[in-house]
Image 1 (cartoon, rainbow, N blue to C red):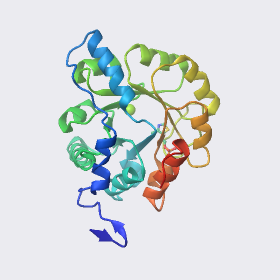
Image 2 (spheres, rainbow, N blue to C red):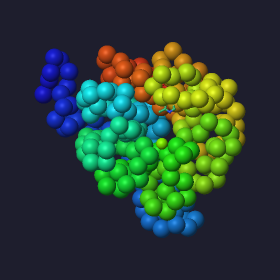
Image 3 (cartoon, helix red, strand yellow):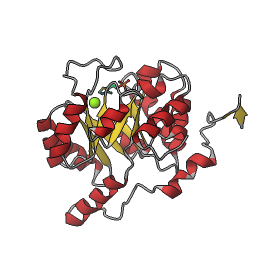
Image 4 (cartoon, rainbow, N blue to C red):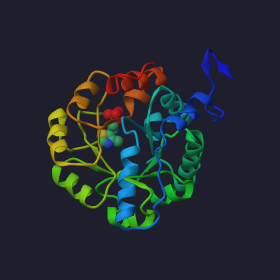
Length: 258
Ligand code: TZP
Ligand code: MG
């Protein structure tokens, strides 16, 4: 169905083009179900398989009532490879309902859905994993509750935090803030591309840079060694969300055309 020349994704039935991406990039390998060396190797393979390049943080507060599900579907059509649902303003029931809609929307697209903070929502909606901050559920407990197959990402600002997260088995790091941002209030120091470079030398798991990243600075972030960029406003604040995602995707993985 077409609306003003654009594909209608409001029915949460993404076009075939989106669902077809599952054929290109399977990103879940779940043949190990228990802990032990084999499970750890299986998990390493699995997190390597995730395409972290364009990580959309779908923030309900940023959207302030606008249709987040529609915007996320547009962003994925533009090239977003991971979606994290962040809903600080929603109660449990509304958060779960939105997460379930998001999960259904992403369907077979191959784009994993991560949930900010809430392990219970991950389990209830069958999301791929959780994103935790330094003050959230400690990683070993989160791992025990979620099991080896779920992805767990941690926000870090220092090398010590990053090394600890890696040691404890995080699947990826959200490193930031890289630049000044008005999307999230923070007193943490901005790391800039140099901060990414420093961490990249010492850390083996994927590093996703976050904070103030846009089309003007994404190239420098990538050059500094980030495995991906995590973005709120540069995508969700754009007039044409799909195009904004595609532009960023092109900068960080130049072979991808729009
Ligand atoms: N964590 C660190 S900075 C940030 C989060 C969630 C906000 C990033 O938003 P933007 O608009 O991409 O700067
Ligand atoms: Mg948190």
